[in-house]
Amino acid sequence: MKINELPEITAINPDDYLIVYDVANNITGKIKASNLNLNSTNNSGGNNNIETEETTNLWLPSNTGIQLWLDANNLSSLSKDGNDYVSQWNDISGNGNNFTQSNQSKKPKLTNYSDTITKKALTFDGIDDYIKSGYYNYGTNITMYFVAKYADSNRWGLFDGTPNTAGSLRNYLYISNPIADSFEIQGNNPSLSIGSTAGEWSIFEFAFSLTPGRKIEKRVNGGNYNFATSTNTDNGVCNEVTIGAINYNNALLNGSIAEIIFLYSPVSETIRQKIEGYLANKWRLKSKLPVGHPYKTTAPTI
Image (cartoon, rainbow, N blue to C red; front, top):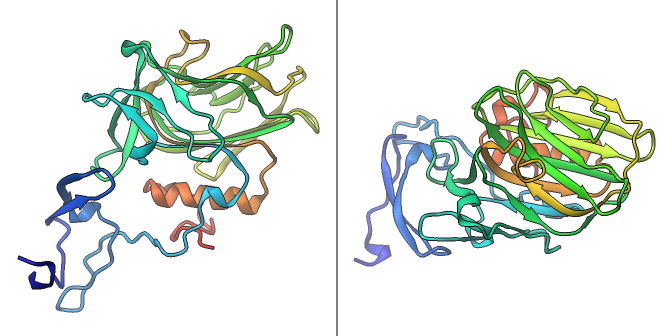
């Protein structure tokens, strides 16, 4: 039967399944209507209550000066084996900051994001999984966004920057509860205790500025905010960056990461809220944005 001979569907129930063909990945499968981002009206004029995600003229992180962009839902950016263990997660910012893992036992696994089959994430086993990249020079500022979740109240490592010169200090990034989520400078660990919940997806934002004042800032889901200052020095240059562990064998992440964005500059409130809105709308975290956030109901557009 030709496409133009198929009957037109005028209403979709959330419990219906649709057969779809993913052209980019040459996959045929089924999708539950409640997992689709549609807004259709049934014959009686009622709304099917299927969440809408605006796709026209969406604002994307590439519209600002990002240095790293890892998206687990972009399957073309992943190198994986037949069991979905990932050996390379490619940077789609265009800057070539790719992350790799050659040891089979230490590779994270591509899994479904939450309970939906339409989005993906990388899951780390908390035993020995991590990925790493090479030389980073973020200068005087870095702002990082992670869409992530962790398993329990232990302290889990997200990011570790290994210094390139003797005497310069490591940068650590942990997520945990009830212990403070924190961006730490080795030897000077200011407390940044703000609520995040084990087992739940959240948007974690960390910013570190060498000047002025060596300020460390943290937000969760665009709302909860805290900051501290560090008295230690750091030259903003890393020989290697690790995701999912601290120093390869410490605080290995038992959890998952769906998306990562790095910027090597201070972020204005406007850009910060657009990134939060982009991530929240994409990963179904809109309800976690604070009341009054400009993108709590719709994604940012251009």
